[in-house]
Image (cartoon, rainbow, N blue to C red; front, side):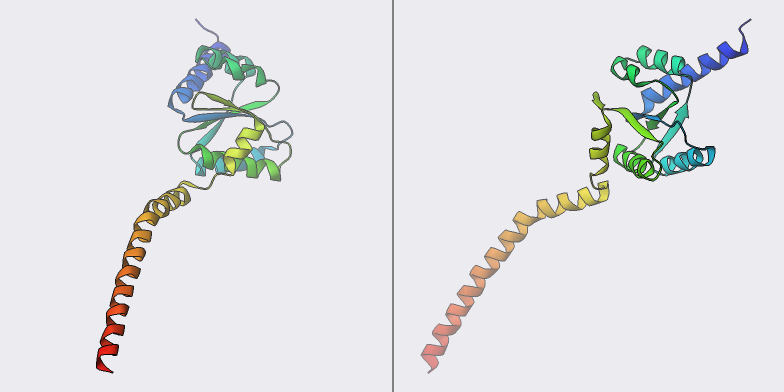
Length: 175
């Protein structure tokens, strides 16, 4: 019969592996010095942005990351670390993390992983500066619409000049 501690470690490891499979991105943060209410507030902000914070023993997290093929970020796990799994848009989660880390200096952004790329602290902060998806979609629609609008305006001007020229000829003939 297995000991309870071993069962808990295996369950944590399996949960990390499942979250890694389902996540579009994940981040590693150090939360040393944050109070329990602060961590709860962080969890709430992350939940709103489609992410969740998971805290496990470092040895369990390292083993799960190694088994899942994320060897490059294993070395960043030292001290009290939390794994943040993003199920939706990584931009919103990175904004929530950056905002929270500015308000609470104890939270340190260590690393992240997005589409086969390892992210450092600067990369996560740069990701947070990208506009929300709705704004990007609006910009794309405007960009796609601008050549058509320009063509319509140009054709309208040509037609207006033609009508103006005909009107001038009519005025000369009547006077």
